[in-house]
Amino acid sequence: MMQKVLALADVPVLILDCQTTGASPATGNLLEIAWSLYGSSNAKDNGVTSYLVKQPDEEAIPPRITAITGITDEDMEAAVDPGKILKELRTVIKKLKQPPLCVIHYARFELPFLLDFFKRHGRRTTLPVETICTFEIARRIYPNLPSRGIRALGGYLGLELDELKRARSHVATTKEIWSHLIKVLDEQGVRSGDELRSLLLNKAEKRKGPLEYPLDSKKRLELPDCPGVYRMLNCKGRVLYVGKATSLKSRVNSHFRGRKRKTNKSFELLSQVTDIVVTECASPMEAALIETDQIKHYNPAYNTSLKAGFRQLVYYSADFKKASEKPSKKIFLGPFSSSSIVEDVVALSKSLTDETSFEGMLYGIDDGELIDEGVELFRECYGDMLDDDFSVDNLLLLGMKLFRKTRNMVRAQRLAALEEPEPESESDSEVDDIDESEELLLEDVTAEDVLARLESALITMARSFLLSKELTGLLNVEVTYEYKGKALKTVFKDGQMDSANESGKAAAKSKVHPWKGLAVSDFDRLRVLITEIRRMRSQGSAVKLTPENYLLSRF
Image (cartoon, rainbow, N blue to C red; front, top):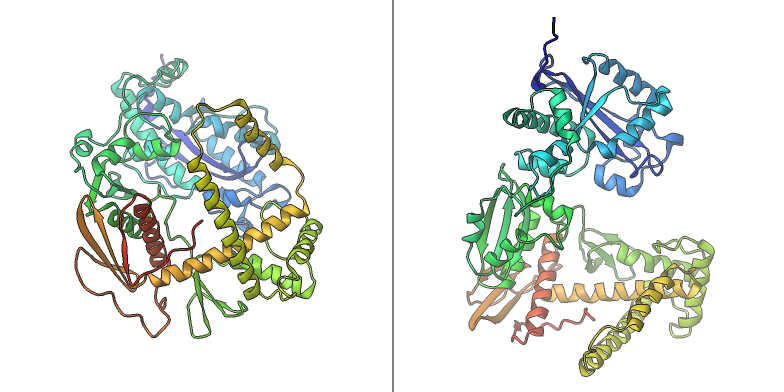
């Protein structure tokens, strides 16, 4: 009697996902593993089992892995021994029909880690399952989809993933992807395991013709040709990306045209966008200001700049010995966008004053003795100029001098460049100069390099101090400018954009600290305003500020 061939929808499978600390077993370890049974004999809402995997020698989690997974060293206190995890996984695999099938999205990455896992803790040289890769199936079913990564494919099918990469959520998404794919395969006549294996043995077709996007092209082609802010939404109505444009029609359509210069992240985003919502603006400046506010409001997954995140403004006392996230009568210097801007200068001051080792963070330089040599070189260069007063406020004054000197030099170079004729072509010598500069970065760091880094820290602090003054001056201001021959006016009251194109005086300054009650969103908004004012002036546009504010923090 012939054995009945089960349809793919009726075959019990193991859905599995891993997160790791590296790109391969040679450079990383299995960090997290999750799985779930799926099929006719298992309810579709069968739960997901997940474990953090105890690391060899209790290795710390690399910061970049924590950034993308959210998994911290504290979380790893609950990690489970690999042998115990493997024992439970084997028990689950035994519940499957033979041959046991394991469905993974992008199995090419997971398999080396799984094989290493079974070799180390299960004494096996092969995996006890046959793997099916949903990424490879999608390559054959959707050849013109911009991206088939789990987030892109899931978004294309109407699913949402958390921003953090976790095995549990990936298993849940892979379940839905597998459920969708077997339905599409059935429509294409691929209904059994053998037929699926035959499909996967055939090489995936190369992309032909235009890429396929879920967004109706009519939606973007009918957008207005004017400045504004656009929001890209997925099928659930969630805002994935916020952008500004001088021309909404031109900018939005540029996302969907061509393939060059687009990153995998761009294709991943566009694979999920099903709708575009726009806010028309009177000018590009207004669009830029509204964009930063909308990024804060929606916190879109695919925006990287201008997100609030965990950022906090920081204020300091006059001697920089006290700091707070809220301004007061005694702690009033600022705002600074990050405490790290000041910390290295405070550490330098302490090291020079107390003649102790430098306790700051000079990224890329971790040789303590070399850093101390650089600090002593700093003392030799600037001790007389500062009368051996290395207080933070005195170092800030030095930073101002260094900044002005550097700014004048940069501006002189720009003027010289404008006067020089353009070269007809790039010569080999110019290319060689670039290569030589890159090689210098690879040489051993010297005390002079440490000195340069310390000087850079002073300049950064000085610029940030000047920026805080500029932003404070713009909290209550009236900006008058022209766009396409039309006079426009934007009024700011306590850092908020009051209204466009309306007359009226800017609000009077508060007797309390002007930044009291304000946050990162206000800081970013005014920083964008400065950028837009500079942009318009560089293009020859007349921009009037009432009261006048001199912008000096840029080179």
